[in-house]
Length: 247
Image 1 (cartoon, rainbow, N blue to C red):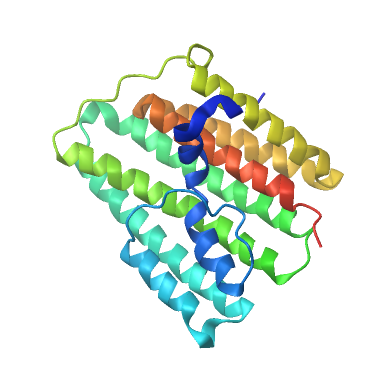
Image 2 (image 1 turned 45 degrees about the vertical axis):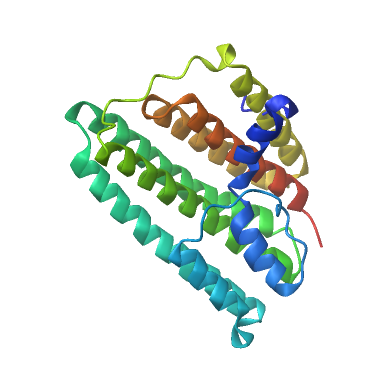
């Protein structure tokens, strides 16, 4: 079973749904459409975000194609930032941590490849420009999140925090994790029930790849970061379950 429960509390919900807020607020609101998640706390603007915000506000980029182009440019920028942070982190990691981190990164990349197929399958069932924007948003945000996570790990390692984090407890021994997995499974089942039958194997493959990533990432993160990863997945599945089949 793949699964986050409402008992996360205010701080847990902030972490869980903060991942998807930034580009939703910037891109979808730019066309006057209410963002799907616009309430979350957003970190101080990065130059990539600031450049995207400027692009989205330009009158000559106000069309759907123009807005998507702004987000695609930002995604490419965040991918470059991700690659740069990863290369620097690799050079600074203690030898004992390199293999676990390499496994984490490889599984994240594999998960993203399968996730693209899931997004394509979900948004193929929708109609309207707002869903074109939403798909571009959901392509961008996980890349941004991973870049920021690698930057944070790099900063800790550079500051002398080279020791591995305290291993998280088993999820069943961590109330937040267990509650989070409950909601994850709930939204997975909801999305599965709404997906066309021909696309359900795509959903299963994407969720399996994400689960492999979570398991690979767990040895190199702490419990709070694990909740962040699960929470972001909950937000994604919730959003997709509310999107599939919409006109």
